Length: 246
Image 1 (cartoon, rainbow, N blue to C red):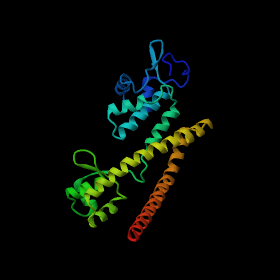
Image 2 (cartoon, rainbow, N blue to C red):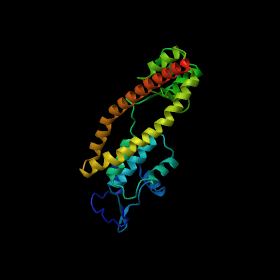
Image 3 (cartoon, helix red, strand yellow):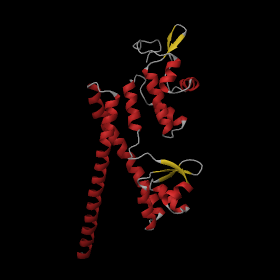
């Protein structure tokens, strides 16, 4: 965006209007500007004005903060966004940051978690639940708990599921999940987003598309996982049969 205001002559806001629309203090706006997280205001004489681009970038910063990004991580993330990105482009970043899980985790203390579980939870139990992504430590002894998955985790504890196996599984999920996320994100950016952008779709439409894709993507992952596991079992059986005949 041009600091002199070229191409940004409409939808101008004062600083007060910007803070009201973005829900952020004047102090934070100025702080983020010094960090390069938002562009400088457009100058009209001695006054500075702001555009929807400023709002979009401030909302993105708030979204990143809600996901636990540190200031340095936010700076790196924002630095990778082109300076000429439109508010719609930035809205896409926010959409892709939205959680892909069915429910929002509920934060609670260990005592509250034990009450919800109906049992005392030892360190190994908590480590296993954390590795499974069901009760993840947040701050000062509190946990973000996926309530819909908690019964599954408790049943695994009852069956003696090894903590080491949960940790190893989490590492596998993290490594391959990251690669999968990057590849799916690339498909969305190069095929889905350009098509909707060319059609003049609003950020709200893009967000709805992503929301509708989530259950299909999760179902596709489950189906692919089950198919791969079945094939792996068949391969092992065939290998054992081959060795027995050698």
